[in-house]
Length: 280
Image (cartoon, rainbow, N blue to C red):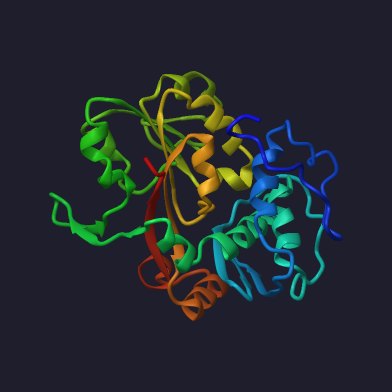
């Protein structure tokens, strides 16, 4: 069994299922392992898919993910409250990206809990002052700045302040909707990722299903997954990920409000950004 293999093939456990996704020797093995790590007896208590974000709340806690639009038509429209969390997490395999958004939030309702993250050595981000006087979180791009200086860096997703990477490194940004001279369309991953020294990957790649291929392409790169949608599971270290720079819910009520009204200080107050690194 390779380091990327699941412990077992995925199995259908309830009314939500995706035929053809339960064999171990396919990219679905990443999703099946993450889903299979959730205990069978945890129930979902609330779900909200807002205009920009989603949360899933369960007996074990709350998880969030950024809404990804598009993909196939939605199939599962039933009330998810009262269903098992593992079952709702099956939606992460849906080709309807709004459905998959719910599934990724369900995964984080289990994995992105402070007790689990603290046990992995989580470091929580603190604000820092940049040279221009602005204040931002000490995120993964700032944390690794000295290490990627002078190197080839590929970033999947046009993050705020990504231009700062280009000040010290050769930067390519893979973006589905190109708006900057730094951006190239995401099919360019096949050409630029294998040559990268560092790869920063948005957590929404779990939702749009590009994560397994990007991780396969990044055999020569140091890989950091970034953003609130990152599934905070240490299993990803077996797929070559060096660090998970994601989030956990700090204030569930503020998350509920922010998701429902499509606004709010989701990053600053409702969520805590943090980083977990692979053991050395």
